[in-house]
Image 1: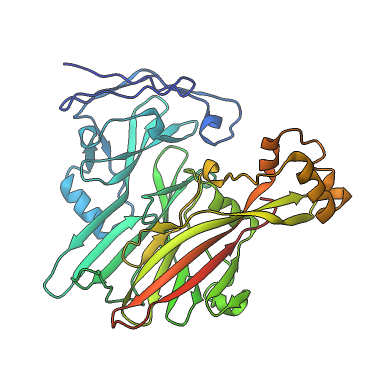
Image 2: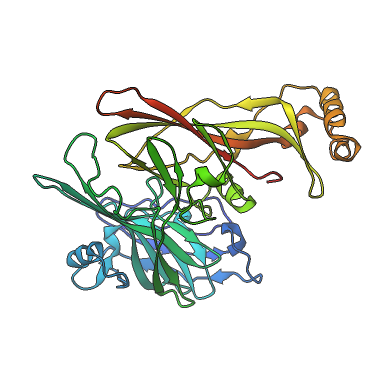
Length: 407
């Protein structure tokens, strides 16, 4: 029998498992230093023996949620176990967390569903949990959409501190037209008004499933509302009444430092900013996003914002899934911008606008590249264009996310 083998050692460059179309075998030789995947442990490594997983090897399905999606999944796997041949090739990067007694991987099966799988430190299968899936029922008068996912663009989110997955259970009733208009616009479940959690215990089992339903904050414009569970403070308040408003067309929402850091991190350990749009009359949304950059000098609790030079990125179109959209998260490379200023002019500008104290933080600069460390993303702008279905004039509104300084 032909076999393929993966050297799953995160100290070495990734080696991708190459498998034949019909034969799946996994040879694991694992030595993971947990600090390499975002965790800080007590200087111990997990040593895993040589392990072989074949197509008909299986892993027990954790029966924790009891939703329709789980019922369908168990109908597919009536034994209560899922075989490894259901999954695609396994790579080093599929490992997302390690503990003393287990390591955790996330894989997609042949139904395009995402699973969390735990293997013991000896490499034996422990449990599998269905993280992300969706169901779509078509009818003559309406369609039903049911899903489990974290956001429109991300199937799941794992919190390594709490050692738990976060996701949402979604149920929507939709008119069968090209706009996929929602029928139960005010009451359906989505990523902004419900959260589901499941923890991985010390032995690699999926436990402590709990639900949190909430009334998320929302921004109120004249034609529509924007809801998000990311607006954590003042739950259920209308943001337009508690935030700074430049005009009838522009509303500013101020983020704290944790929200800012979360938004500016584009990796597997940061959450998404998911927004839900509810219009007061039938219509369609077009969404665009850009960021504004500026120069800032951070002292000991004192921040100096230099007005010019500044920067504006190009508008980026966003895709909406029914009435839900994820804000685009810029990579570190995309966040960089060049102020096109000489070292001498930069230092003089800081001295003039900020004074001697903040000047002491830039006096060391010797290259123009060092200036870029003071070029920040100051705010992220969402342009919302709403087009009513009745043919009346479209409206354009702006939602400005003001990021915390010193991030």
